[in-house]
Image 1 (spheres, rainbow, N blue to C red):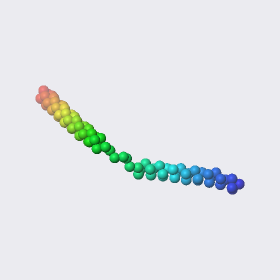
Image 2 (tube, rainbow, N blue to C red):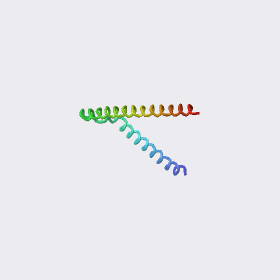
Image 3 (cartoon, rainbow, N blue to C red):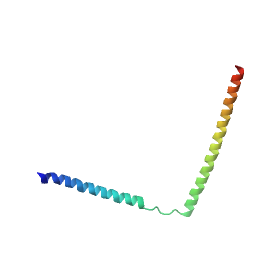
Image 4 (cartoon, rainbow, N blue to C red):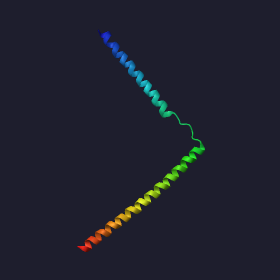
Length: 86
């Protein structure tokens, strides 16, 4: 009986060891594979797109800050006129 019980355990151990080995090999391949170098023109286009996006974001942030400050000024003006009428 002992021999019959050890066969499934041995099979499971071999299966587990194989899965771990395969996992280690695949993870090592994915972690240490180096991407091919970018073409200089592609890299330049990417940097240009990044700069344009940064400028647009800065413009958008400035616009929203201006809108926020105008809203705060309107609220302060409304609060001042409300206290003056009381």
